Image 1: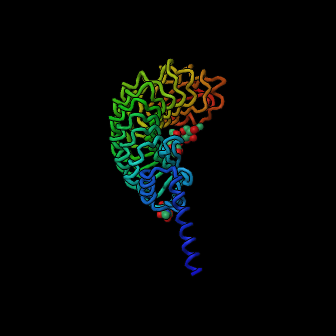
Image 2 (image 1 turned 90 degrees about the vertical axis):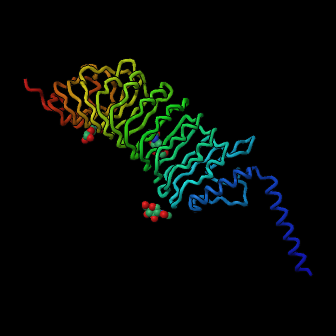
Image 3 (image 1 turned 180 degrees about the vertical axis):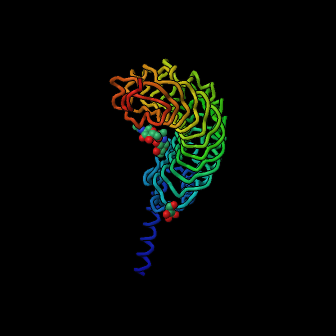
Length: 331
Ligand SMILES: *[C@@H]1O[C@H](CO)[C@@H](O)[C@H](O)[C@H]1NC(C)=O
Ligand SMILES: *[C@@H]1O[C@H](CO)[C@@H](O)[C@H](O)[C@H]1NC(C)=O
Ligand SMILES: *[C@@H]1O[C@H](CO)[C@@H](O)[C@H](O)[C@H]1NC(C)=O
């Protein structure tokens, strides 16, 4: 008798406490369902102990909810070792503004098409994973997006020209994948808003579209591709570019005629087919990085205050560059 009374009491206490959790729970039931699907897709990782019995908004790590609507607005998954994939359920978090998936080195499979449903998304990072498949065409549906970073993955195929319809995009990072084909001409429609463009360490071919001529980047990274042609139109006095990483391609143009914007402090052109001489204007830039090694340049290296920190490895292996830090010119 006593025993059953105790058990009834403790059962009702348990039931009451469960009831009060669910009554006071902020987490939206649909969001919770989607999150649990996502957790399952990631292989129920030890580092992501989302307990279905608790409130996702207050008790779960790696996410945050809006204060008023209590809907999940940001999700940031970092360094999970387990093997898994990205669940279709990502598309069922309609209030998501920011999605960051970084350093999940055993995460494979494609980027789920349901991501296209996330119409509030402004920030998307899926980086340092084994995600493969194409750079999805459907990313062009994310009209509010300002930042896309899909670097350090195993993405294949070409860069979809439709990305050029993302009129709020400021940052595009597709570097360190296995992308092939040309840089779409249409990308220049993203100027002037898009100022960070990272396409380096892929297998891109063809020429840089001349439609890029009027465009000023903060950073442009085209390094380690198989791009070719004359890119002197990326330079100019009026440019506000800070960093140009153009090394290890097949660019071929006359360096002697270049002019530089005031803010250009980092320029890497090593391993190309650049010819001509180094003009005196290069001495006006406070270089943090200047590397023209492995080209076909010739003539005397201009000397000056800002040139003193540049070592000979930034000049070596050219046709006939001479003077400090290389050996003196033969007169
Ligand atoms: C994750 O990948 C690494 C290296 O690829 C491997 O050594 C490790 O066993 C994998 N871990 C899991 C949980 O699959
Ligand atoms: C893209 O994201 C990765 C992972 O956080 C980061 O290491 C990388 O620097 C980012 N790319 C740029 C250009 O900021
Ligand atoms: C310039 O590039 C060459 C070739 O990749 C490299 O060996 C050298 O270390 C680089 N110099 C600097 C200062 O980065």
